[in-house]
Image (cartoon, helix red, strand yellow):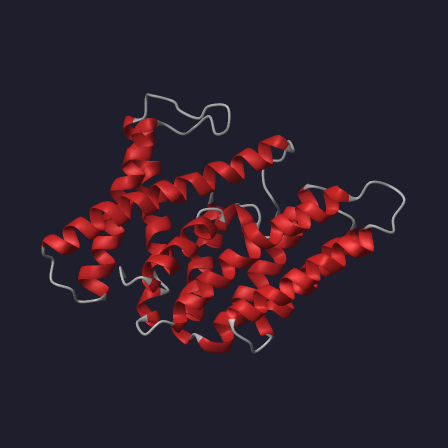
Length: 261
């Protein structure tokens, strides 16, 4: 437990530092998270090393090339085509490597890119905190309400400790997180609009955070793994800590694009 708490403290401190600094430190943080996350994901599925390293290299290039998102996506498409081309020369059936490499970009790379890109919005210095607030509040409320009142076990085949009461508690945490973001960080008057936004967006984002956690648990259980990795003592791997964030960040990015946040 002490090791888990210590890791959580320096992890939060690191996230806080890069979010405050923005710019290059934040982009480097995103690259590291994406590269390690892709490595962890492809390692679980025992993908060939060369394909794993090519995927990691492609994720770095995706972050650092100075072009807009549509061009980045086109370059990524070309990379995936090259992957398929290379694998087609192998004698054995290599579709597994291609499929999982492609999925690693969708599941890990793009969400982390959207997370880091929140900083580029006009209110980015504040918006970058929202996915963390939602996920942290969801996890915290779900945990404490779950262990206090949890009786109805749900999703027992995927995550036996989760309860319906904890799930509802997590939604309450998500709602409070959005209210806190709008009212405290953005200095918005707590009126009916803020109340409804927090209720709908906070509750919805909390459900998405739960979904990310459950989806990651399903992937690990399918491969008989407890954690994706071991780089974070007491917490597992990068993906074990970012499983909710990588689901929530793209949705918040979309909501910010249409003017909700």
